[in-house]
Image (cartoon, rainbow, N blue to C red):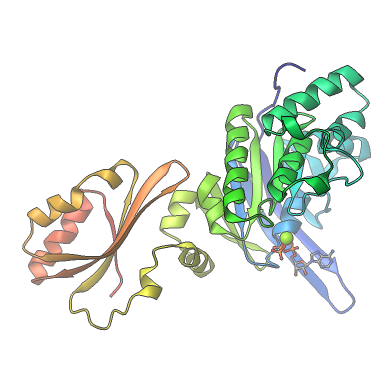
Length: 345
Ligand SMILES: Nc1ncnc2c1ncn2[C@@H]1O[C@H](COP(=O)(O)OP(=O)(O)OP(=O)(O)O)[C@@H](O)[C@H]1O
Ligand SMILES: [Mg+2]
């Protein structure tokens, strides 16, 4: 038990559908979901309340049985598993929850030990050693003898994470794992998840209704709305150039910088343009160079520099004025420097 033995994995979701029969009519919670989750990535699924997020993530370990469609993990169709195979599957897929779901009558160490104990595979000594490793991993070494009621929300979620990792899973599923936490604790838990993802090469699938969570740690994202995936891709692409109206709204709400909502544009005579820089050019004085080469006037109205996971990006809202020729020249300069530009008004 000295070394982490996490295996890499791929999840493939094919034509997944889930409906709940209710008294009046059938509710479709998932409708023709198709997704591919890569080895070792952090994959986010975002959507509004009732969109189908929990249903989707719960089908990945068959806590919820799909009505139609298949889920492949390492090319095995898990929807065809019998109960023995299912039992084993659940050891390969850890899960953490919004409300932690800890056993309140057991100590922190006992909570983490529980999934080890029920496998019947390990001696007491092996288990003790593994629990100590896990406590260390989530930075709770001092708290093993406490009860859940004696812990903060962030500490409880750390216990949830340690417990979920106990049996060396390939995949960690997170159902709104930070929604009950304050912003600072949320960031600490997200950092821990990112750390675990890198250290253990663990595939993480998380669902959330907060774009901030996606932006902090996810590599790719899918947007779910009314039981369907409406958009998916790399977080940088989806966040900076959202295509679907639902995504655009989620992104706009999460922006500290939101030119569309915060600015009274009635007084502007020139063109209102949003510029987006992604990657290394974010920190280079490119706009200076453009300004030096044009007769058009560029007025900066708002600006921000931030990060999406590891990628820096900047956004500027500028007003362009001058002759048509000069403005056209500015646009070709933007193109030349790979500055994405969007004319807002
Ligand atoms: N056991 C169930 N029986 C009937 N309908 C259900 C059941 N579980 C979920 N639903 C319905 O399926 C739809 C999707 O629910 P789901 O819990 O997956 O949404 P969600 O995106 O997780 O929402 P939230 O952000 O509020 O947690 C909703 O219309 C919900 O009412
Ligand atoms: Mg939910």
